[in-house]
Amino acid sequence: MTANTARSNGSPITFRLDAASGVPTYLQLVHQVEHALRLGYLKPGDQLPKVRDVVASLAINPNTVLKAYRELDTKGLTAGRPGQGTFVATVSGITSAGAITGYYFDGSGVAHGYVRSPSGTITIFDDPGAGTGASQGTYVGSINPKGEIASFFVDASNVYHGYLRTRDGAITTLDAPGAGTGATQGTQAENINSMGAIVGNYLDASSVNHGFLRTALGTFITFDAPGAGTGPGQGTTPFSNNSAGEITGFEIDASGVFHGFLRISGGE
Image (tube, rainbow, N blue to C red; front, top):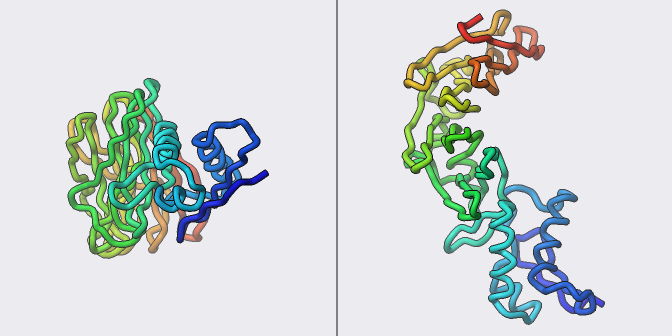
């Protein structure tokens, strides 16, 4: 019943065709990727078999493979990287209008951001300061109804920096006051609300976490939850903020115990 199989070197998925199924060939490829994602066989950053390898192994038209990969791109499940191939993407957020954003890792383990418009067009982007080594690059955390994206990138020295990407593609780097400049230290933006206010955390020179709020006007406000520890890896980590200005996240105390917190507008 299975006609042929195709697997590209380095790809965790093997494509199989069932000539008797009556399902169009391109849809068989699409369904197999979707099934592998549901079962966890494919994970963000995994590369799909190269088009030429699928064509050679399954003896099918290249346009059939390209159609399948375009369908996966349109669904926001993968992102194509010119000259490198097609990779499984991580979906980080979706607007009420249907715009999707996320990131993926290329064949060298470098992260790249993407935005998929409601019409299905995918735009890949990188912060100009992002590094090009493994685990470096541009990550994506959240998108608000205006299409503004807030997240972070990792530079060539493995220092973290926040960024704001506007709907038209302009990118502004965000470094919280007090952020450390050593490897794995720096600023991570986590969420942007409908008003354009951004929250996140920064790791100082002693590797202690502190929270920050960047207002829509660009002013930084740093804060620590009461009871947060002051040792390496301890401290305050905000994760989300709403249109009313309320912020939620967690703190790690001096004993390494996690506690949630709510910061209301005004700082209490």
